[in-house]
Image (cartoon, rainbow, N blue to C red; front, side, top):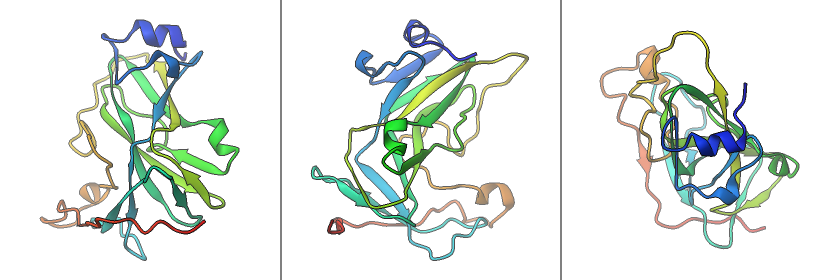
Length: 193
């Protein structure tokens, strides 16, 4: 069963935390989350599951950023959420998919007990200009039945930044694999549109 918007608001401060919260983003059975002003793109030509992959950080300027097809962009929500006794799920908004922008969020379902900002996987079918602060996706809450333990992984829990894949931690990649390599760029080369 999915919680209604009114039930989401009723559970704020107990089973659900959304910070910041704005009642204007509440829907009949979900809550819209905002896009932060930074993205990551991988620098590797071939991504390797067994090692940390290099990436660089992009800033979305006020005039927007044009996303290109064939490129995976990792973003994050402005909001920090925390969920107990429910299963959170983040999904694309139909208004964006109708423009050819697809937002996947760690395969959609979160874990009961997840706490942090959501990393978003963005890809498009044609060039599209995006803006920081847009309502990029929606979070829904499912009731849970049966016994469970809350999520407590050290991979993605309590995320405050965009989280690239850490699959390498599961499949064995050596002692220093946790050192994610980042190329810092002060300026963004915004593609002409």
